[in-house]
Length: 350
Image 1 (cartoon, one colour):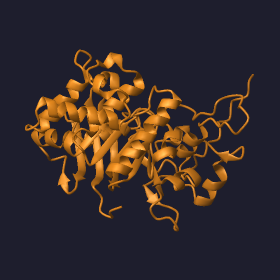
Image 2 (tube, rainbow, N blue to C red):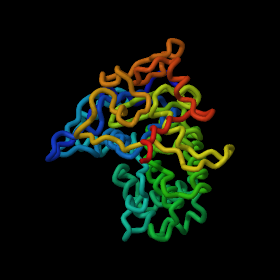
Image 3 (cartoon, one colour):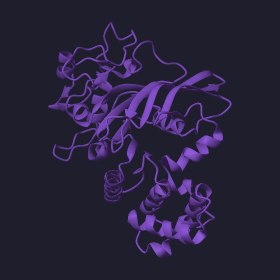
């Protein structure tokens, strides 16, 4: 794997002007992505994952958006690129698999025709017959059976899993260097989920794609990711390698996400584990650590804003935003013999 990053994001901030004030959806996100690497971005709905991804390809630009920072693709600054440049880069160098493939395809046009149109828009010298043959090859490569016939089907004639495969085929049509997959297994049954994840893993290995996987499912992350960013309230609260995040997580929010997974190797709990409360309004964040109102380990230092820092001297690339010491974290994250977040104390019944 090359040491030089293909995609570099620095201090990315994305806000939207609303009647209630500026909604800061992404606040200071930064990371590097290398060819052949899979970076997973995880967090609850509303944590800023999709806005981060959409900003990378210029889809959040609008009159009421406020975007700052730097996004460089192989040294080329994307935030300063004009719309014509972004249209050229989209698909050719950086592509996205959207969350809901049913709404990503036009329902009144055949799926193959829509991908042919994308190919010909970027490659003016390709005629329809050439582009159609390429689509058939792409359908074969992503595991759609009887590809020669299925390219002429409409979106409603595909199952959910087949639509997702077709969406991946469209994203790969122009052989991009960076692939963003936004919740690619949402609403699919577990068997199809496994097939899609295996497909993404194979494509990443075969084409050397730099892949960003956006999900709230840590089971998905464990299958394919090399590195993990955990986001909460628009910020990165923890980052590290897959092993660091799963075996030595340092932020209570990460413990809560891991503890919320159901385990087949343990007795069924009386109540499914969950993180208490709800994510805060981005228009009215709490003082200091944004996770503080939901965290059972809050103490006097939490109203101060913790920076994203390396707090483990032996692992300088593993960073988190929590004032607890590493020793306190290892003690407090153990709940009934596994990593989790303590449930809040219930008030006594009268």
